[in-house]
Image (cartoon, rainbow, N blue to C red; front, side, top):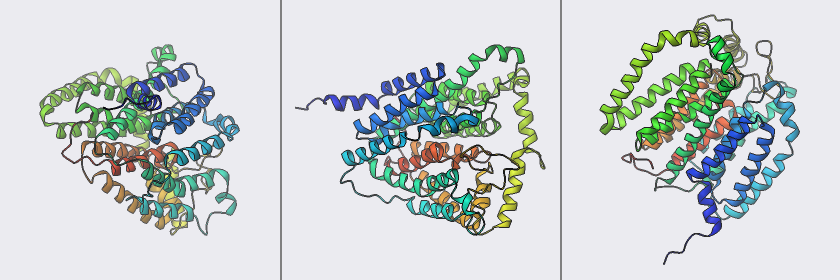
Amino acid sequence: MMQSAGPLQRVRQFIVSPWGLLVQFCLAAVVIIAHAPVPGLFLFAVIFLALLVVCDDVLATLPSALLLSLFLIKVDNTTAYDKYSRLWWLIFFVAAAIAFHLWAYQRGKQFVWGKAAWALVGVAAAITIGGAGFISAKEYFAGGALFHVAALGVGMLAAYLFLSRAIKPDDTGRLPAYVANVMLMMGLFAAFMVFHFYLEHLPQVMETKALLTFQWRNNVSTFLMFALPFPFYKAFRKPAYLLTALLMYLAILLTESRGGLLFGTIELIMCILFVLLADKKRRLFYSILFGSLAVLMVIALPFLFGFFKPVLVRLVESLQFGSQEARAGLYRRAIEDFLASPIFGTGLGYMGNRDLHPSKEFALCWYHCAPLQIIGSMGIMGVLAYAYNYFIRVKIFLRRRSLFHLTLFLSWVGLQMMSLVNPGEFVPIPYLLISTMFLVFAEKTMLPAKDTRPE
């Protein structure tokens, strides 16, 4: 006779269930509504640490980490470093909880050298050596630079190896179902943040009849683009999930992020093509649905143009050749820096571009474009390392071509597109870490390509 699960096991099951995700969503929503990021940080830090101790599955901590990352983006960048650098001592509790988790749940597990490991070794080498012979020792060993070099390189390799060991291979569909639920929750919370901001400033919106401008628009757009493909994945079982995709896309449009507007639209089209091509039974229904929505958008354009005009004008201006805005200047500077140090680049910590874009405390002077970041900061060595890295990632994502693998791939492509105009993948926590987790999810999911129905 099968024995019922014990209290601890029932707690673990609840934490990773949709109801457990809803509880964490509501707690994070209270943080946003109350404008309490610092108390929220402590609350979700406690939740994260407690889950590391209580749960044998490290992925149980994923929702709290994502929600924490999301509501912290609303902090003013000019004061963020001063506000949160004082909380450096929290790292000791994190280290202790991780050590306990490794001791309690990971002892005896076989070391796993995943398929992407060597590619990450190459990237770590390119990042660590980047700027050799060019960057000064003071710049290279500055706190912000050293953190990014370590986190983007060796640190991400370590995270990948840890996750490869901790996450079990799955041929049941449970891993894809859980990941899809978590990413859906994350996307809906990001949309909630945008809608809540608009509700708070509704009189201003009604008066100006224009989009609101806020500092965290590119960050929240990146989160939304990470999440956007997952409602389409879940729609293979329940088409009603497409409504959540429309909410996420609407939130992207409301951010006034040029990258979100352009690349979010491209990603939405890719997701629509995904379900049209993969779901043959509902192809006619989807064709009528998406066709009707497209017609409605065309009809509404004259009424919405005034509302979206500022971001559209900024987008067109930024695409013009010879634009004088900061990003265009940084693009040109990246090429100049590559020519000045073509083998190893100028290094991530090089601050010679602050005349174009003064960086915040502890931040790097980004080129705001991943390909140019690679050639400018790491030169030819970086180009070779990242070319191999991207080749391996695409190979891993597309090796089975199940719906889950294709969804992970579309989400990763969304990050790559945003990385063309923002730091994106060069932000180690959370963006690159999420991307690295996706690699492990793709490697550990053993569903055959013919599998087409997520839970």
